[in-house]
Each structure stands twice: as structure tokens, then as C-alpha cells.
Length: 260
Image (cartoon, rainbow, N blue to C red; front, side):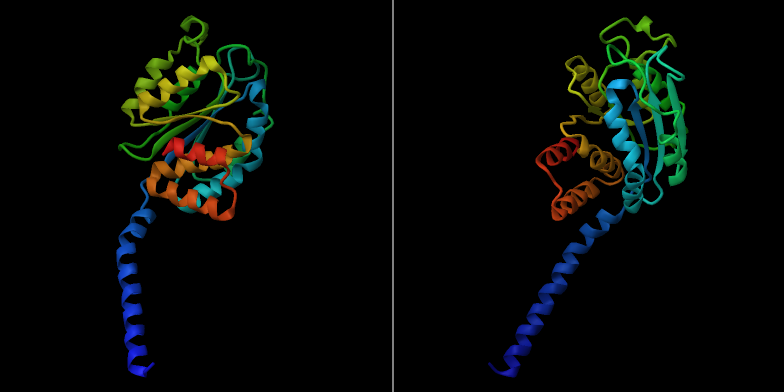
């Protein structure tokens, strides 16, 4: 083969590479572009949620770093709840923070530990009330609550009057809709009476409802929901990354598809 032919083939190949880069650049630019993110980790800390709470406490630094690696200016809040008369708190709230050490210290505090409960409704409505007190910024994008629990709020399987603080989850949900906050509900322990309510909370706010089948999927699910709310293209990129690492199990893939 003559040198001239080889040179032409080389030039043709370089041209194709350049064209491919040119076509790929707009997609890559979109994937890198993020909107401001404000996300709340809302967690049931009653006794039945012990292992799920521990999973998040152990991996909280990893969760924060994975989110902020993709959305550097993410603001994160944590709200934990039990039920009335179940211990030292009904709810505890960490305001939006960008400090890893502050978020980690809050979640790993000895004050945040599984308490009694698990037999009936929990104070979800009070946690939603606390979410409405946060300093959400104005605008339609990048605001989400990840609600992780196994029981519904009062007023679903009992009376609204059973909330001793007089909160109504429907009113608090409407207020979150006005703030353009989506609720992603994650059902643990597969409690049947919770399904319809968690579906309602998600559908009402434009979020998604999923059932957690494997506890070790929880960390990646929290990361995936958070970055997706900043840029949906980040979710596909994250899914691809988990696949390449060989850790995209069937249950994890199902979860990530469920929030897309």
C-alpha cells in the first residue's frame, strides 16, 4: 500500500473522529450543566427502621461526596422523625448545609437513634411541616425530598386527630407543591397500608414512588435521586458508571429505572 493511500486513510479517520467529537460535545455539555440543587433526606427513625438508618449513617460521607462530585454547590438538609410520645423528639431538623462535616455529625449524633414504634402511623406530617420551614430558594427546578420510611402519616390508617401537633399531611404536601418541591418516597419493609399514601405524596408533587428490595441499594438510590433533580442526564451517566463497576444489580437497576 502506497504512502499516499495510507495518508488519505489516516486523514479520513481523523476526520471521522473530529466529527464524532463535534456531535458528542453538545451532549457532554448538557450532561455537565447542572441546576442548583436542594435536597432533603427525610428519615423514619422508629425501631422498625433500625437497619436502614444504620446504612445511611455508615455511608453518609460517601453519599455527600458522590452528590457534590457531580453537583458541587448542592445544599443538603436532614429531617428525622418518629411519632408522638416515642422518645426525646418527634422531629429533628438540620437546615440546608453545604458542609460535609455538619451533615455527617448530625446524622451520626447519638441523639439520632431508632426509637420505639413501628405498630402504626408515624409523624410523617410533622416532618413534612418541618420541610416547609426550610429556606427553599425560588424557582422550579432542583428541589426534592427523599422520604425513607415504612409507615404512613396520621390520617391514613387512623384519625388526623392522632397527630398531637395538629398537622395534616395533605396541607403540608400542597405547600410543598407551591414551592416546586418533589417528594420521592422510598418504601422499606413493604408495608401494604403505606403504599397508597406514598404513591399519593410522589404523584402529587411530581416525584416518584419506589419500593426498596435490598438495603444496600439505598445509598446509590439517594445519590441517584439527588443528582437527577439537578440534571436528568446525570442519572443515566451514574447508571452507566455503576454498570461499568459491576455493581448494577437487578434490584438496583429496577430502582434507578423507577425514578427516571
